[in-house]
Length: 297
Image (cartoon, rainbow, N blue to C red; front, side, top):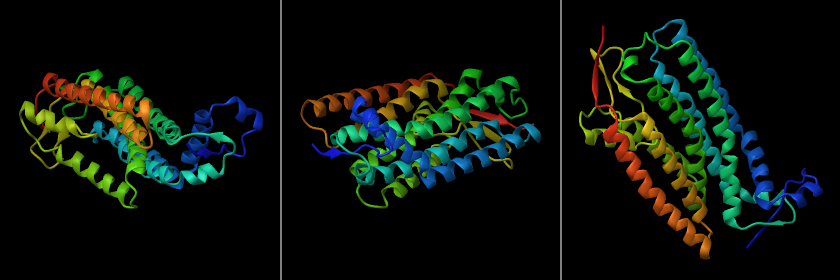
């Protein structure tokens, strides 16, 4: 057991009335919100996404599904870097708090709760895009009709979940990987993985490969191609797979420093989530639409 401290700005009466987890979560959430990388990536998301948003509705020549990129690449990957840094520097938070004992899993749980800060930003962005899509559907986009309204909404929800999954993965890496280049390597792997799953592959097995990545796009091709391809798999079922992945990352982070009955419980949770993730991945791949060629007019 180790003792940690509560933010000196928190009144003593509030400290005594709050649980260690609640107090630490508040401290970590403030640290996350004030981190320069989070502030910069959020600003970049707002600027770049609204530029794209204006082009999509103003010039009507932008593929609407690209609007899912901003929360995933900026808030998600930026949040990964921030969460890793905060996890590796918990001593600074410890020095700011006084008199509240908490073990490592409790401190990890506080960091995981703080990941709701970037998630809230991604959700707010996604919500306004979903509303805009339903008010004025992007019917000028090639292949728009290839997906139902729930499937298109699920694509955007997946982008918002990246705003949670990236930071949660950052906490996990911060607990288990101690070398400084870990978050950058993880970022490169995630980007490469997402790009590789865009390779067109007309089969159910191709659907499975397409769906494995933590973040995917749903079409392949460029403006100069004779046709584009709508990649296979169910965006709706894939939401469950993403939630299972996030749960696995969170449980893995909590396992570091856990012992006894708590460790045994976390191991069972990990096994259950792993099985659930595989089942949901297969359901999403096998029940979703097949690969479809979208000829250009």
